[in-house]
Length: 428
Ligand code: EPU
Picture 1 (cartoon, rainbow, N blue to C red):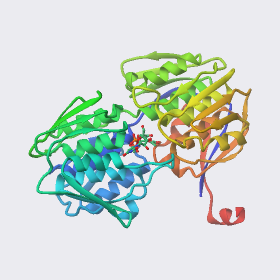
Picture 2: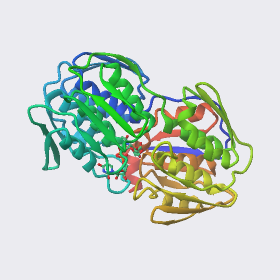
Picture 3: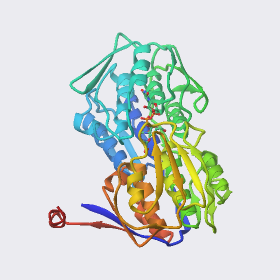
């Protein structure tokens, strides 16, 4: 059993390097299945969701060599099967990217319904709609999604009913070698969508418009090997920005794209934080109590839902009442009960949380309910008087590389403790 122990009230100050984006790495690595030559991927975050994706690739028959901590050489030539092992697929959401990639390689894919954070219903109807439009048939049997192309996949005009990151990427993966032109409308525009399109183009794909509402894909005969560096993680950067603001800190984030952080910077400035942007770094400075502010999460370029729990936590000690509206997921306030244990005053009604700022939070034993909720509890611990003990930290390690080391390097008092099974039985 592993826990984080946080002793709060230390001001964060110093420099932190942001890693590659988990939500870009998770589709880019499966996309290599669609290619017939080895690829080198740089700036790969060393997080457990990426390890699971790599394990799936290896099970399919790919050879993966770690050149250094953040660089992988992946040779997909040995892949012989279109069936993803069910136990691994169910571990994470991003396993559904193997459907698009395997369709492109074999014309069929068999992947268990994906897992991932529990944020309310997470249907994949828009993914399936895209595959069907490209000429595939699908069914779900015994928990496995089976998708099969007929003779070939043919380009199509697809209008998504909801803006979906996953469906946009999966449709790009499946259409990249489909015959003719595919037009995707009402697509997601997150930085990782653009990154996946750039990666596929570097393998010889012909994708235009990523980052806008319409993406056009002209099918190509084959994809070739490439060397590609993953975009910096917008959400890891945003988490550190919020942590700095919450502790009245002064930090310089390096390896970031400030443009990707604008919606976050805007909200922090409204709350009284000073942000200075440089080419590939950003300084966050705060020396006062934050002002209350309202936030609504929206698809990019709006405020990201994946920073909602962290931002809500920061506002627990703001001066005044803040309103947080969750615009993407039905159930992303499960962490609120944990914050209440720490003295936060929050009322939740459906997708709206009303936060009445208190003077200070106090440490408590809490449990990470999902990845970003876990990051929020780390921030809560940093803001609190006394000690906070965070359980179920495996959620956090799915998406944050060495969060303890990075926070310690800028002055946080946080450590990871590993307890023996004896401790666990005694606790039970
Ligand atoms: N939706 C549908 N049908 C679909 C797909 C999505 O109705 O076929 C709905 C969802 O229920 C949701 C909305 O559309 O209400 C957006 O879902 P989306 O498909 O964009 O989410 P996702 O691809 O499953 C990714 C990230 C999430 C992030 C969301 C939104 C990955 C692996 N996951 O999920 O990240 O919250 O986009 O930006 O990329 C996280 O990193 O902590 C995380 C949960």
